[in-house]
Image (cartoon, rainbow, N blue to C red; front, side):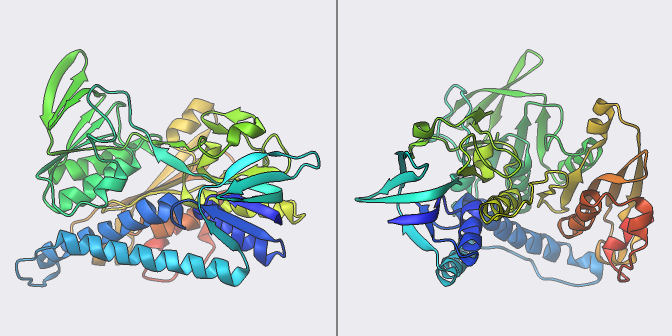
Length: 446
């Protein structure tokens, strides 16, 4: 069985690449050992956002009196929330399966293994009792949660996002190890439902490289809601419900009915014969060029396996670039404007450079901060709510970074991303006609 393209992994990179390749006239086979949609659809982006939306609805009803609406004592049903989440996932997985079929992709559900590279350059793979040859191979094997080497901490003793998304009983208390995007989204969800949440973060701020000022504002908002933060703090041991932490040489113990680990993810590089190709490594993954080619020109890598930008939308864009290159197009992958979103309530979204990055580079820049209260719609829909849009502008007047705290930041950040990718000036962006009233109008105020 010979194919133009074989793809390992049916996550966002894999299923997007397969559909694009088949529609482009390439004979395409896609291997997936678990479920189409990968981590993003089955235990990441989609299920978390489904649960977060339920929590947001619950928060909204509880705060209805701010909008002159009287509501009875609201409640929630966690098992039904989980059931709805599962229904959403099944529907979207079925949709991907149908799209692949309609495009003409051959989907094989099973663990595929790279056998080796032949003298003519083709790649041989095996799955079950069958073997397959492909002129081009795309490696889209995704990532897995990291369990740090802490005494008493193991995959059996703690939650990762996978287990947290399946819980049907609300824990009274939760210790979250890691204050990044995943940690903060789960902190938001469980805090809304009444769990006593503790967030332990080794660095001096939450949300890693995202804008420091707005990260601090989001932290302050959740601190007001009862989430307890321990920054610059290390977890040194876990013993059942006791989590021992250390800061500046002083130790203390946190009590958590459950412990959730969210310290990051690492590329999946073992279990499918990658070593047979001897590809050049990069960090904990595989090195690629601007067309997503590895050190072997007919072997491409997309998504988390590149150990660069572990985001579903990055993976999709990388897959499109890879397939376009196979089809003879010369589009290069650009990481200039990759947006990142934290789906807390309020949302926090960023794209491009931060102030810290610009300062470290020595480049001249200035910052324009616009309160979201400049938008009539934001004021109408966010009683007693605050929000900020921050634009980072270089000495040529071009927008090089944008950071938004406040709803709906996830929908607005794409506008700023286009401005950054196309190197628009503040003046250029302000010339576009924005509908009124919208929150997006604040971008014109830069």
